[in-house]
Length: 318
Image 1 (cartoon, rainbow, N blue to C red):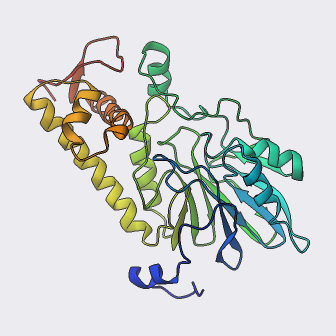
Image 2 (tube, rainbow, N blue to C red; image 1 turned 120 degrees about the horizontal axis):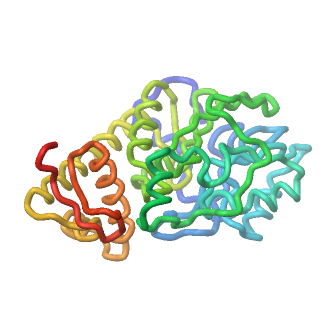
């Protein structure tokens, strides 16, 4: 593959190898980059978690994935011809991304790098919400995750010949980071091609997610390698689409509330009319994230204390 010249979106798509790869079989994406697909397909993880192996001699594993014997063996098998895993980078502490980090570290001696444990970086708004309200959440959190090294926003690592910079991108989860290597960004669950991110308060924060998206627009990366699904070959367009989608969803919610009040679950059922019913609980979490954000902006009201089934109304004085 040749990634050196700018390509049209259609041309970029043609250069990609076939997806999805077989679970456990390394797929060469670029001369210094392989993908190993974890064996955890589901409606929330698509084909499974994308674990990336960056480098040729000193190897960085990005998002080691779920605690799986088969996946561990697949990652260890990438150490060929003198190459060794020296760094483990984790975008965020969800059970489909971080649990295997500890075992992989013990097997290889590689240190684990991340922004912090699951709730690191949580905003004051979400901290207060967690302390004062029963709004659910906690889906998929890896509560035992603890990196060896805490990465600051903008901190860089030298991994063999590769310079990797960490960008703090809270929203999907407060400790979410993206990693930049050259003109490539490893976007975790922040930006994906196949789906929008789940934002489930208080672990997820819509205001932070939107700010993180706008921050990515300040950069000009060639390609995003996400935590699930295919590479994002038109990153700027995808981020702009995600922002527009959230803005439209906000409008949908306000339109429904102008008719009659409703809880997050009730609004999700009224708005997501073409969604598999099995996915409505996740949709209601996204709606709740919007409602909390709208309440912070003074555009909707609710009775205290806030709970998962709280009924919201449009504010009379937005």
